[in-house]
Length: 208
Image (cartoon, rainbow, N blue to C red):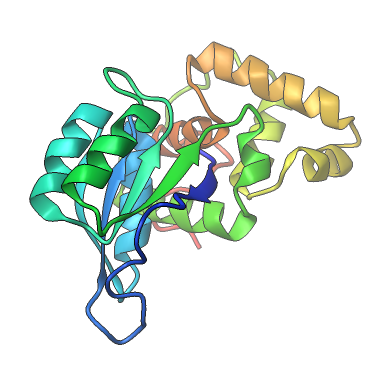
């Protein structure tokens, strides 16, 4: 899941923003389990960050944040039961010292994730994936697979189009078709699915 991150203007600064002090305590709230797990693994790699909790909706988030009082809350805008926008006021009441960073999805998610960020998330997912036989690809065309492999390398739609000598619009159409066939919601979900199922041409556990 790619994100636009915007800082809540009414929140106080994190209690421990300086490297070398106590780690920044983070709570992640997102209903996308793949994104939630991938981002959690990524943040826990940092020496000065610790993920103290995760939640899948705004209601559960309020209870968790009241109990943990994190320095930073990474909060998805759209979630079931209670949206991130609706949860903001409650979070401010129960944890006034927390800074909220809103996460918002986009149809062009790969364009919002930097290649270096995508590579780190995917690498961590790859290393944690259990070994299993390769699965067949479900009805994806050769061109759709080509596009998805380049997405896995962190390329955006324009870069993929240049490499495959097709238009950026055509790339986006291939991505949409792939997501529909796989019944997934984002490019990152599709790539993680391909890695988990060990599709040919995608990174696998133990690869360089």
